[in-house]
Length: 154
Image (cartoon, rainbow, N blue to C red; front, side, top):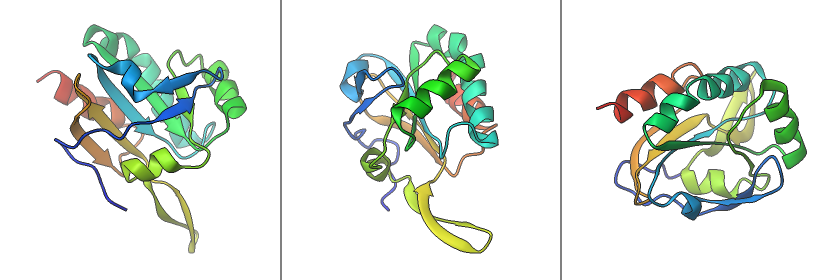
């Protein structure tokens, strides 16, 4: 798994959001973007992380920064998650995990002694030209927003 770092070009992608619309990285040209990858909708950590992003959305907007969540969940599960927690930003479905692989966040995980492949919770801040400003791998759900805000407010 190759990690992407500051200065790298962001991988291009087009994925379906929770409403079935295509969303591409190129749609955000000229604007900063914070992308966070989460393992599974409606789980405690992913809910904490997504709700924290929603609570900070006005702050992100004031800093001309869009937010996007990505997980391997199907579109219908993303929609239910967004509706349940009133998440007002795109939640993208990466069922084949090709985008997660391109960002270096699809890898081996362990739970109760068993190994499996899945999303390694990570966040990325991307500049207006589509370059990685900062990356955080294995980020805690509660640290996603503070870490990104610290960089944005420099």
